Amino acid sequence: MKKMFCKIFILMMLLMLCGCGDVSEAPDPDPGDEEEAEKYEVDYLGCKDDFKKAKDSYEEGKKVTLYYDIIATDTDYTFYLDDEVLDVDYSDSKGYIITFIMPDHDVTLRVESRNTMELADILWDTLIDETGATEDEVAAFVRDDFDDDGIEEAFALIGTVSEDWDDITRICGNLWYVSPEGCVALRSSVGLGIGDEARFMTLGDTVYILFTDYFVSESYTYVYSVENGKVSEAGFSGVGYVAPDDKYSDRFTITDSSYDMNYDAELGFMIGHTWKKYYFFYDSETDNVYEFAGTTIDEATVNYWVKDIIVNELVPQDCTIDNIFMRGNGLIVINYENASDDGSISYYHYIYSTEKGSFIDDMGTEIEATPLDGTYQYCLCPDIASYPEVPGPNDIVWYGTANG
Image: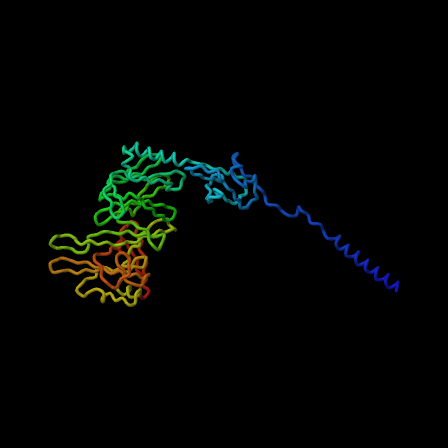
């Protein structure tokens, strides 16, 4: 029995020795085998303590998040990583939230501050000095950094109150643009007065500033933008009332006012007031604004798009079709006229929306198949008109031109 126990003991010792040998042969991990990412320094220009959680250096590719809460009233702050402006967030509890990805080189982080009240005073003083207006004559003073270059500009309306109508205060006077470089006279009111409140419309990266001159039964919106501190007037300015689209953020409408209902042979001119919306859009690829203009099509193409529309059934037999066209936003328009024996002519049109699947009126509201007064033009702004390619039956394609 003792011999058996000795053998088992010796066998166990051999197994333990073999196991220990295996462990001893395993290589120790070498800390040098793990590569550390290169670190690069941040130069805070002596203001490192102003940035919470700031470190002297960060690894390449690391997302850096810092906080800046030394904020004075009436002051704008701009943060730069080297010479590039950083897009920062803001929190009431943390202040400015600065984030960036650490590049593969040393960088400089700096902050520039600007007292907005001081600049506002400069713009205001410039306006008063150059226009000669009194402070009481300034009916509107709208300032902002309209071109996002870190320098504010202003639009000012100088004049006297004409009258209030429908909660709109109208000013008889002049519209000005003000920058640190001086004042630019934009226009004078022509109608009953310019509304004292500016409206804004953003398309792409451009902020448009809108002022409207009101008449008895129509209005005209003048549209401006600022780039590199210079003011310019839009190509669609002053042709009607501009309003952003309710459904699409990159579209807007202009309501045109025309006397186009009837030609009175005895008087020798057009009479009958109509109002019609025209449609515009922003193209992000070209960074331009265009109008949905109309491309001429025929009756068969109307039926190709809308099976239950027969043009000859819509237009009375004693009338003449002037033109049929389709806009890029899917509106099909049929213009026609009815001539009288004395030479007078009455003008009518239909509008069908392929998007809504129904007829609409001149303001875009769905209606039954009812003729509308006046003539709906191919476009309102020929210089920015965009004519669509319209497919029709038998593989035909209609191409638009300046004449539709």
